[in-house]
Length: 279
Image 1 (cartoon, one colour):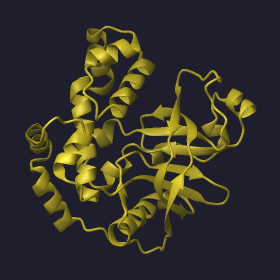
Image 2 (cartoon, rainbow, N blue to C red; image 1 turned 30 degrees about the vertical axis):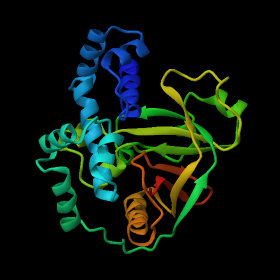
Image 3 (spheres, rainbow, N blue to C red; image 1 turned 120 degrees about the vertical axis):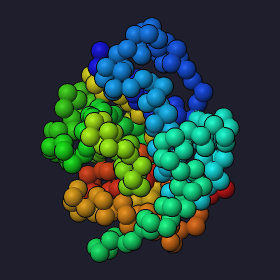
Image 4 (tube, rainbow, N blue to C red; image 1 turned 180 degrees about the vertical axis):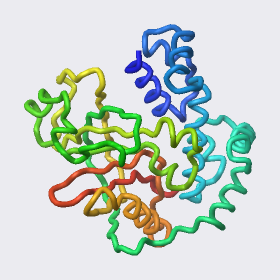
């Protein structure tokens, strides 16, 4: 049942901006709504509805902190149908209105470039596929990251049929953690790391049977802030450098709120932060 509830959690994450119900989720999983509510609470210590609102508000806190988007636009991106319902929910969670949260963060948590110098480039990525397994641990607590055998656990079929893959992780909580939007319960209980492979060629994984723990992801063509660094222990500094570059030197793009990825290239690591073009 845990694999099913992991799929439920991922479904909630991927549909934050959509007015979907728990009944929609139950149909997706092939369970009754009451089963989903009961099992989800056992796995995550909260209802699916509460969990989705928590993730919506964390996404909103990221966008308030790292972009200058209109607050009403942020509310819509995070699945709220009107500004007032968003403001009430946000105030309940963070004890500040969205406007005052943005002001307070700007006053108290100005981004400061790290001591080490990093270079960030804005690049457009080609469409790709990835296969990931979700692990409910912080990335730094997972042993063997970057080791191909660790990333291809249970995936020899994929390696044999496709090749051209790169060990990678996706970090759905990285930005929210960076702007101090995660509460202590989330940080202690269910930080999320997706571990697997980016498929570098144009081949599709659709015909490959994956173990139940893994899922396919279609990665669209989009812009990224790309920063190279040397060791996974430098991830926090590399992310800070990326955000400083976007904040102080880049006027055309801002973070989208999507999960950053780290890829283990030959000799270097590559941090890719998904972007949106300013409107």
